[in-house]
Image (cartoon, rainbow, N blue to C red; front, top):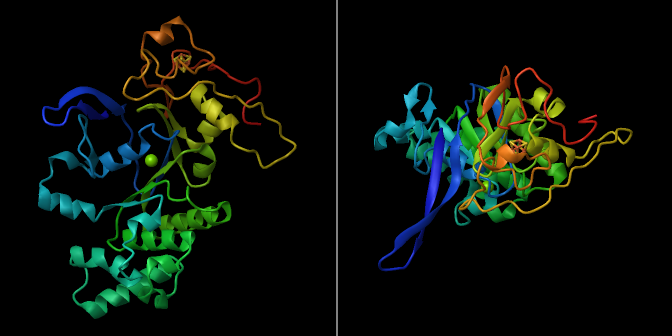
Length: 329
Ligand code: SF4
Ligand code: MG
C-alpha cells in the first residue's frame, strides 16, 4: 500500500503547501526470489518513484516495504547500509550515473570499498576483473574512462557495479530505453544470464510492454500512480483484462506479418498526477467508461488466481471487457 505524495509549495520565505503530486497512490505487489516483475506504464505514472521507494532511496508518505521479513522502513542507518548491499539499482542512462572522472575499475571497485568487501587493493582489482568478465567486458577496460565506451558497454559497467556487492534484488529503471534495439536485446540477455547464475530478482521498469515481454515472469501495469493490472506474463499478454492494458498491448508490434491486430488509439493526454480524475483515474481516456467510473475508484481485485485488475467491468469468473474484437492474435 505504498504512497508517495510530493508536496507542491508556493512562496520562498513563507512557503506553504498548495497541493501534492500523487506520484504513487496505494501500490501493492511482491517479488519472489529469483523472479522478474516487469513494471510498465507511460512516463510520469510513478514507476521510477515506486522503484526508489522499494529501495528506500526516498521515504514513502505511507505504506510498507518488507525485504526477507525485515521492515525496511524501520531500519536504522547502519542496518539500512547493510541492506543496501542486497538491493541495488541500475539506471536508464548509465552515462549520467557513472562518474566521468573515475576509471571503470574505480567505479566498479567503489562499492567493494564502501562495504569493506575487499581486504586490499589487489583483492579489489581481482574482483573488478571478475566482474568485468561476468558482464562480457575484458579486464583491460578497468583502466579506461566511461566516455570511451558505447551506450551498451556503459550499461554493462553499471550492471557490474550493481553486482559487485552480490545483491539479491536489482531495481532496473528502464535499463535499455536509451539503447539501440539491437543492443537492447544483448543487455536483456545478459540480465537473464545473470539472474540464472546468481538467483537475482529484478523489478524491471519499462515504458512499454514490448521490452518486458522477454524478461518478465509477471507484469504489473501502472497508470497515474496506481496499479491497474498485475498477472503472470502469459495471462497478461494472452488475456489482458484492463482496458488500459489492452490499449498498450494493441500498440506492441507483432513479429508475424500474417497476424493482424486492431490498434486502439487512446485519445487525450495523461491527466496531471497533482489533480487525478475522480473515480477510476483512467475514465477520462477509457472508451468503455460508464457512469460509475467517474465516481467510484475501482478496487484492485483478484479476477482469477494471481491476476489482479482494477476495473468496474471486470468480474471474477466472467469474460472481461474487450476494447478490440480480436485480442493478441
Ligand atoms: Fe474504464 Fe471504468 Fe474500467 Fe476504469 S473502471 S478502466 S473507466 S471501464
Ligand atoms: Mg522513470
